Structure formats: structure tokens, C-alpha cells
Image 1 (cartoon, one colour):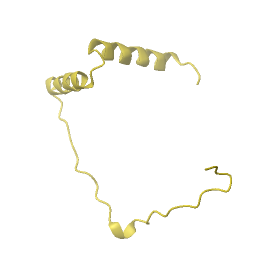
Image 2 (cartoon, rainbow, N blue to C red):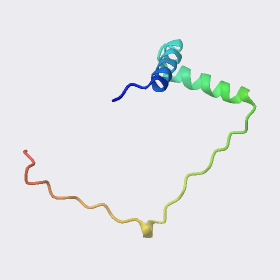
Image 3 (cartoon, rainbow, N blue to C red):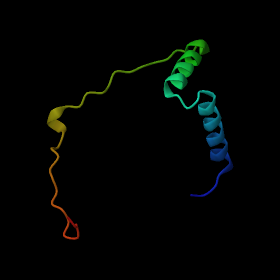
Image 4 (spheres, helix red, strand yellow):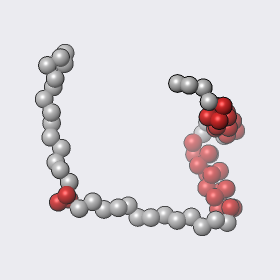
Amino acid sequence: MQENEITNELYQIREAYAKQHNYNLNSMWADLRKKQAQSGRVVVSFPPKRIDPSTVQPITKSKPSENYER
């Protein structure tokens, strides 16, 4: 993968944030929710889209390829 200064900076920011919270996902989640509440912005949550079962094609098992080793 090619080096990119923008993505490298984002990786550094992400790493620093995770380190701040001792890599604890619950702590990061709580912090982000707190920041979201303090931002004063309206947060919109949409219900999941329902799929019409009559339009879904069934999943079929495929045969293993001839090169497949067991």
C-alpha cells in the first residue's frame, strides 16, 4: 500500500485517541457519546430498511472446485 501523509496523520490521531483510553472500547464509546451530546447537534437515527422477502433470491450451496483439497 502506498504511503499517504493524510492517512498517516489519521492513523496517528486514532492511535493517540485509543491510547488516551487505554485501548478500552467502552471508554472510547462513552467519550464519543458524551462529545456527541455536548455538541448540540441533532442526531438522527433511522429505522432499519425492511427487505421484501419475495424479492430475495435463496442462497444455494456451490460445489467445491475441482482444485479444492480436502
